[in-house]
Amino acid sequence: MKKFFTLITLLATVGVLSMQAQAFQKAPFKSATASSRAQRAIIEPGANQVWWGYVSNNTSLSGLGVQAKDTYHCAIFIPGNHVIAGGKTIQAVRFGLVAPNATNAKVWIASKKPSTIDNTNCIDIVDVPQSDLGNINIDIPLNTPYTIPSTGVYVGYSFTISAISNSDDQFPILITGSDAPNTLIIKTDTNVPSWSDMNGQGFGSLFLQVLLEGDFGDNDVTPLDFGPVYGEINKTGGAAFVINNNGYSPVSSVDYIITTDGNDSQEFHATIEPAVPGFSAGYMGAIIPAEAEQCIKNKTLTITKVNGNENNATDKTASFTMYSLSEIIDRTVIVEQFTGTGCGWCPRGHVGMAKMREAFGDRFAGVALHQYSGQSSDAMNIATNKYAKLSFSGAPSARINRGAEVDPYYGSYNDILEDMNEELAIPALAEVQVSGNFNEDKTKVDAKANLRPLFDGTYKLEFVLVADGLTGTGSGWNQTNYYSYAYASQTGITKAGLPDDLKYLYDTPATFNPIFNDVAIASSYVSGSNKVPAQTLTSGETSEVSYTVSMPTYTKLKNALQYDQIYVLAILIDSSNKVVNVAKAKVADYDPTGISAVSSNNATETVRYTLDGRQITAPQHGLNIIKMSDGTVRKVVVK
Image (cartoon, helix red, strand yellow):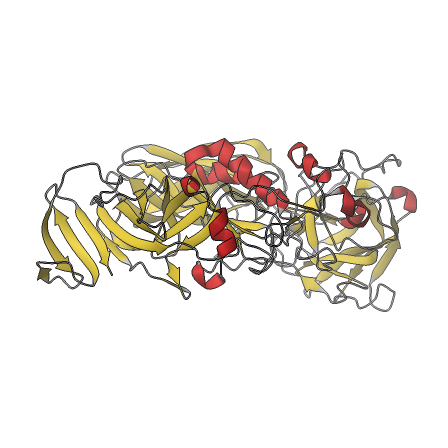
């Protein structure tokens, strides 16, 4: 499997665990211009030269840092057998450093990660003139050009932050793109004294390039694995995916074929706008026909020509999965947020969730998991064994449809709404409806879900109760706010530097009592296990599943509940643990007839079976399968 390399900008702000957290943290890069210092002239490539790096030079940036005075060391590793850089000669290094209090900057190359930046541990060291700092593009020639050996080379830069005056000093390392091995290797002298390859941390790649010289090939394009791709049967769909241009010339067009079950399609032609520059990654769009019947197929796409010439790449093929669907079902997207009253950065998560509610309405299903702080300091705390284990690394953070961990305000890019739009564009593979009714004393909710999948399979179903309008005073309700003016001297945050919808937090006290929405208060998890049995569902058939969820009993939370603002969610999950679809509905008052709004017809029960297929004449403990007079099949848990 090829590593997915993309130029999509990751501008998420990873949650800070405490005010004095010393681990590397990420923040959006807000500098409109580098500084008022003189701009350094950019080195233009000569004959047989090219600027190359794991990142593009023309891309959005983020900042990374420990939010304290320290000396930073940042590097990439270039393997000796790299398809582009291997065996080439490094003439210069390009990086960015805009922090106003950055001093003592150096660029260097080394055969191994240096313990100290000196002539003993480095092959070459070049001092960066102080006048060159404050720029996004700083080009520094090496003292002596260096040919990359078979063992590879580390290329990096170091600098000291002597004071903290703004966010550029707090987060001085410029980063962009996505994670990959060898692309972001960092440490500091004091706070993080050991070298770490940050691949997998969600920080992206170091904004650094090298000026390479040598003999470069051309017409060499590798597509990266992508998908899944969705389309209606007998129609032509499309997909956008990443290609690596390993050649010298820009790529403005490609030709490709699609292979299904060993059979090749006709050759398609695609124009790429904008063209992908040499030795860069970029996007191309492809026409992909769906099948004539509903099915799931594994396919390959092979690029045969580049700019009208034969593709010289060693690897020309990408794999993807194609879902050919008999109908397109809109999906509701669940966003589960890790938060808590003791988390001072979590107010931005509250804003992000409110922003999604307003933008997407019923297609957004928010679940705020108050698990950062214990029950004594957070009245809304839900025990970890009373909800699915989502393994968040810090707060605030979120998972959209239980995917990658992202910031609940900034998302994977610079706005969580962009992530939501991407998810909402993907069709659902099942229709899900849900309803809920309180019992007579409002201690339980009888939840029901109707499930109609497009594909046969074994599915998991989870029920969740969430509450809006929660508020209170005193212990358990005080939300910490690090965006407050009261913390400005410690955080360096200014009101002017905040996005418009976060500015009010600067004027808000260090602790305050907001109204909390989307708060998870109960679920079908008991003692760490989901108590709704797995469901074997048949394509096109509607099955009903029922479960009774117990309401919370903790007095502070119970007394704050607004019973007309409690909702039930049904989360349908496939055998690969992917969220298929979600439904949300307001919990209705007690109905002594036991009739739920999820079912609007007058169908009656015709026959009832146990899970192993035995016909029974009365409800039996466990999962009962009921065939109705209208032909639907319902699955009911009898307690």
